Image (cartoon, rainbow, N blue to C red; front, top):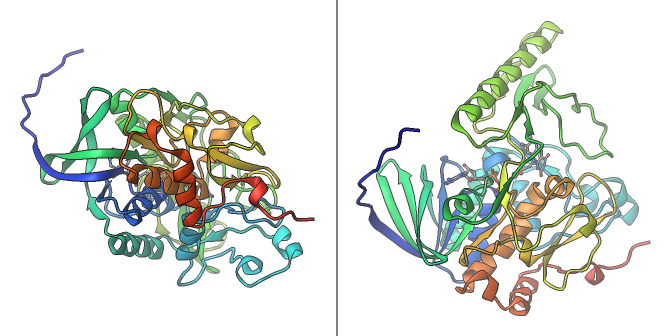
Length: 403
Ligand SMILES: Cc1cc2nc3c(=O)[nH]c(=O)nc-3n(C[C@H](O)[C@H](O)[C@H](O)COP(=O)(O)OP(=O)(O)OC[C@H]3O[C@@H](n4cnc5c(N)ncnc54)[C@H](O)[C@@H]3O)c2cc1C
């Protein structure tokens, strides 16, 4: 392969305590937690809107923060962002029983989840981060890191202004693809099953606006499954290469438009797409190989180092305590992950990649990052105390029993 040595002089434009790479749900929660805990926080986002897959990717279903048996299991920022997303009204799935003092029976019937408007959420999240004192830099990608021993000393970015370095104490990798982990030599794993093509889009037809979940959809078994269709392509995607991602985007939009034309043909003559995906709807690409790798066997297990809990969106019942050690790896001491690139494998990766988990792991990662020490050196008891004082519930045994 032909290679080129670049002679680069990169200016150091900023310094911060906590650098959050990526402004999806995980990055939003991380930056919010870090800033609220007094850290000088910078959030870098490659695109020009917050929310990642949850806004630009049109994945606007905030999956349940309950266990399916009537018990809320995710609290703190996970609950705050869910409520923020519907501050000006839910698009669908308004969780009446949960927000209006419903009975346990009602809560068992309808899980605590919502469908929200992506544009309103992105705006509200932006305001929330600005209020918390987070410096947001849009159109800015992490492209490299500079290391000093086993720590990242600077994160190198590319933007309209060219290359710029940021001096950092701690880094949260919330890129969804573990980009910073890969760049800094942390151990990572890729997705052996690869990704199906997806083409979720919004349309406006004779019955008003709708979200079409085109492709193999993430619909919990207790939904009616009307949008749950077979894969729309035989091709599978790693999602880590520009050419392949380009192919994904082209085909995703092609399928969406074909779907619209088919619906017009079937009678909804004036159907229009209102939004097609702006970023690739890839579920799992690359993740950190953490100190602990969560697997499905860890459901309903007590972890003494739990930093919060999540439900299983695919099945009613199981509750997962999230151990602190599934957020970071062994090699790079001041790097932690949040969101869909934390350390979980097999089915558990699929269970742990969704929006509520991004918020729970983001709050934990951002809070830990604000401690200002290397992640393995964080006093976990103190971290847990801080999380509890910020409304997080850590253990299944802390939840009320329900019959
Ligand atoms: C088809 C599909 C259906 C899904 N259905 C649901 C569902 O119904 N409900 C649910 O809760 N979840 C669902 N999910 C999962 C969920 O949407 C995502 O896993 C979750 O939103 C991921 O959040 P995140 O913050 O970890 O990552 P992302 O949303 O991917 O955010 C990462 C952010 O980082 C930015 N970024 C990436 N690389 C860089 C870089 N190098 N430098 C700077 N910025 C960078 C990106 O632009 C992006 O904004 C679905 C996912 C897919 C693909």
